[in-house]
Length: 210
Ligand code: AMP
Image (cartoon, rainbow, N blue to C red; front, side, top):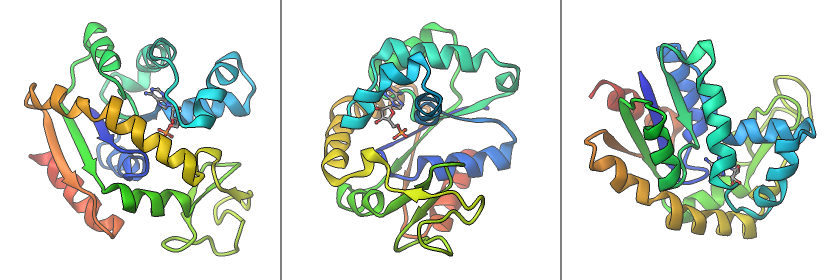
């Protein structure tokens, strides 16, 4: 099954992508994670993307389209995949269509902006392994340390309140139109993000079967 997860930054796409990945045994592909990894490794892609990412803007379409083209050509995608954070603009969705990629389902996770502000500003991410925590909802056992690898957990640069505001604006302007784009194809299912992750997960799994 080829799936797309839509939703604002902080709506919980990454968590749900992991759940589906385990459930269907298909890879979850996050363009944000690929770009962050490139940044960490100081590659040309990372350098190109850094200023956009830090300010909360989107990386140019042609850069992320190239990333996805390459990633989807790998063997592990041949039985299906979950796209988390791609497409984020109508031209990216059109590029996916032009590549001949058939999408079976699009799940849009909806969460109000105020909740997203609270979630992202309290999020802490392990610098080593990328595991995600929240200072109120999911604290690590030792403050500032990752439970999994003991790496340092930090506030992502783009999770600072001003940058979150910018990311939400970008989302409403450039990404939200994708709801219409996929509603027209009849592939869109909306999941209302819940307070408890397990409740959102139950709705996501139900959406997969619908
Ligand atoms: P994420 O972790 O998905 O919130 O992505 C973090 C940042 O990476 C975004 O704010 C963008 O700067 C960049 N990014 C990730 N995916 C895309 C995409 N599909 N198009 C443009 N920029 C992206």
